[in-house]
Image (cartoon, rainbow, N blue to C red; front, side):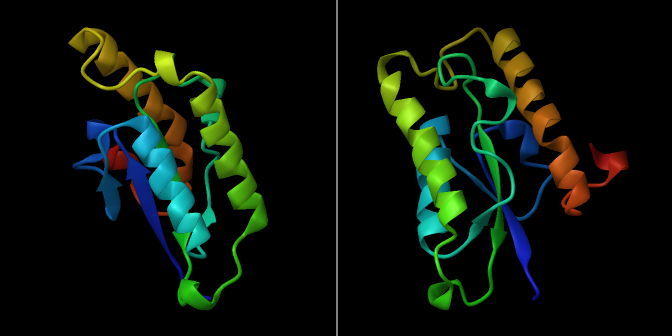
Length: 135
């Protein structure tokens, strides 16, 4: 089956590195959009809560999805959906403490953006979305 991948992120470090991707405003937006794509028949490639970083610890979040051809006729991947719903539940449990971009000093945000990039690097390389010389 022919497929392609899509990175959903709010991390600006990916803008010149990865295509295709969707850039969103907040980490919660990333999870909601990813969940909606799973509902539409696409599948998670990376865990939505990778790195065991809580929403109040990391302002950036990235999720890699497998975009299934003819997703409108595909069954919803229950495992992907369960992971997404659990991740959103974690976000709801700490709604008042979620870090959004622009809240922390720029040097600190730069560090968090780097961590997000590093956590996604292996998956992006593995699926051909970046090359070693570009990341």
